[in-house]
Image (tube, rainbow, N blue to C red):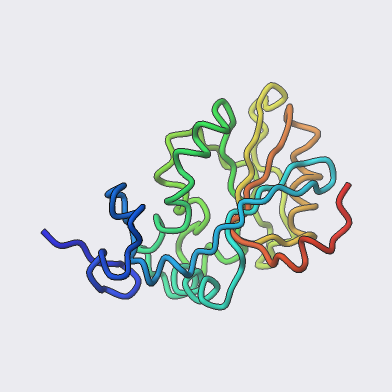
Length: 194
C-alpha cells in the first residue's frame, strides 16, 4: 500500500534519500523534507540550555501557520517526528511542559500540546495565558515541582516570552531545559549568551 506525503500528497518515496529509504521511517517525501533544515544547536539563555531543532524559514513558517491557524491537525505529528526518540532518551525523567498559547479559544486547541502527543514522557500543564497576549502568563499548577526536571517546549524562540516562562518556573523546579522547534539562527547567534 502506498503512503503519501501529508504536505504535498505525493508518494512518500518522491525524492527520498537513500538513508530514509533504508530506515523505512519516512514521514514526508524527500522534497518536503528539505523544509526541515536540521540545526540541532544548543544555546545558553538566562542559565538554561536551549536546544533549537530546525532553522526557521519561510517554508517552515508557512507549514506551522497551516497547522496552527488553519487547523490542519494532520500535520501535528510532523514537527517533532525526527526527535521523539532522541528527546525521550536524552531527557528521560523530565516532565514535558509546553509553552501556552494566547489563542486557544480562537483555535480550539493548544497547538504545542497537540504536537507533543507522540511523546511517552510525563506531561504537565504548568503555564497558562491570562490574555490573548502570550506574554501574560501565570503558573497554573506547581504540584510539588521542586524535585522535578522540566523540559519546556515551544515552537519559536521568543526572548521575552521565554524569559517570562523561566521566571515563573525556576523557583518551583529542580532544573529547566528548553527545546524550541525552530529559531532564526541570525538572532540566536548574535544574542548575548550567558
